[in-house]
Length: 268
Image (cartoon, rainbow, N blue to C red; front, side, top):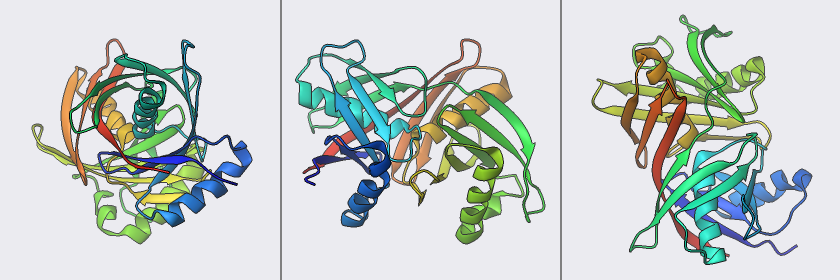
């Protein structure tokens, strides 16, 4: 089967988008083949475009999860394929019940600056999960299609950032324990003005585990968590392994937007 796909770079979270129609059950295997051919690819989504509709773009991730970086990349690809002159694209994405609004601005280098209005947290809570680590109480941000555990540098769990084997086993265990579609561990350090995020994401539906170069939904989860904790609007620029992302979260109106950049790097 001849598979048409493109590869995007949204802040280093390299994403392949497949345009060939593929049955959902076959998508994980196709995704695995693409990731074997392109080891830098961290995730694969499958897109379908219908110009002229109120929601013209459909994105399904290989594991059925939600992904913010793939969403902004799918919106950019839609503009490239449709030729429409618009600064906003609505995308139906796996894992979430409502279309996602993506604002886009083309840059001279061929990339797009993007703002993605993220699905709001279903719940932000402190939970105690099974662990061999002394302090197993943690903040869980449940979102549609994905959940994240935010681990700040003062937590006894923060040492997992430097113990990759233990962290990867625990994210599998905790994903199952929480019944999450997909689970990220967001290791966060900062002093209130400067922030650094190290994301680990496990997707059981696609059986993938990556220490990601950036994570849009994890960035959103951090913003929602901090807004809830401080009980005020936050606007954070966060340094991630491959660059920076920004999140603005208003807890009163429950609106969170992440800002990033995406660029086509390969078109097969």
